[in-house]
Image (cartoon, rainbow, N blue to C red; front, side):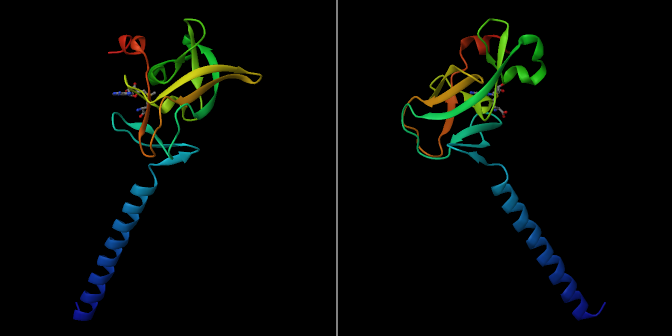
Length: 151
Ligand SMILES: C[S@@+](CC[C@H](N)C(=O)[O-])C[C@H]1O[C@@H](n2cnc3c(N)ncnc32)[C@H](O)[C@@H]1O
């Protein structure tokens, strides 16, 4: 092979590799975080995905108002069991939309929730228990029953 061809081929390979690495870094940094309102979904500090404060949040501020549908426990199976809330009666389950089902558990939570009935159906309102700084992971307490019923 001509010496010039070796240099050109090597330069092409090196620049292709550099471009690949740069694109990989860009996608890794850009892709995993999905922001909506005050919440960004990113890699959790405790498990899989988690919800994080996308901005400073004041104590008692509403973080997210999530539309929900109430179904029976027969409608819920497999991994979905780990994502739903309890409903108004023991056999009911609440599928909470938006980012409401993605918050992880803590026994010292910075978020709590309550249910409201709107004319369009149930809503789960997630609010801050204290001032929360941008970047903190958001946790609510799943409750003792939740952990007792799982291994
Ligand atoms: C509602 S999901 C939370 C989002 C989940 N981390 C994900 O990646 O989709 C509930 C599941 O998250 C995990 N999880 C939540 N809080 C946790 C914690 N404090 N420690 C360990 N795992 C936790 C458990 O596997 C649980 O079944």
